[in-house]
Image (tube, rainbow, N blue to C red; front, side, top):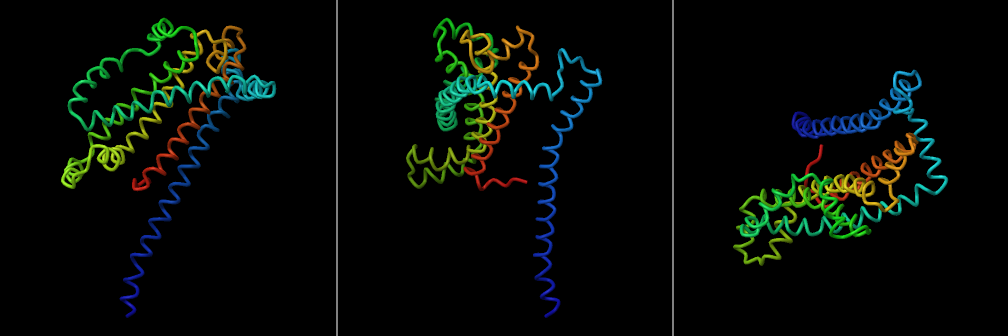
Length: 276
């Protein structure tokens, strides 16, 4: 009986040890993720204060945070954030929604794939900043120009990743759905979209980052006179380098926040995916 009890406890003990090692690994990785940017900031501060870095071009992080505080306390940061966040959210929705629909349609229908894929393959490599003059020509100097420009940046990563996800779903799942007489909408809702969801989440994360890049380009060159991108360019022209870095930091923080939000939503939508 003793041997049987020990044999029964052994798998449970081994499982607990594996879980403890996995938990330790997660906590260690989380600590590294927090400490690594802090180490970079401390080194940057030290090199800047010591004169190794030219403070005219690489001001100390403390000066950058001080400039960010000044912008926030004066209310300027929040005004610019309202403009930029609105443009980013509207452009993201305009670009992501049709991208998911088209990507799924490409994965489910060979005719749609044959018709759309060459167009996407041809347009995707075109430098996005080079297309901005066309947007200004077509839509003029308005908010909708920035919306559509951001949407273009979001569209391509999302549609490509969505199509890849649907195409990589095993054919047996589609066969089972057809054998049970499932309609196309049911196949889309119960097979294609859930199977492609990990790729869709990846595409949305990449699209959000590309949307931020497009937002910066549009605000710098679009002539609106407001937004984070405009403040970066205006600070450069006035040679207030600390303010320029402060708004670049805003871009970085918003990009990190978007990645965390998309990742959180992705974990909730795909609980069956194992994450170590």
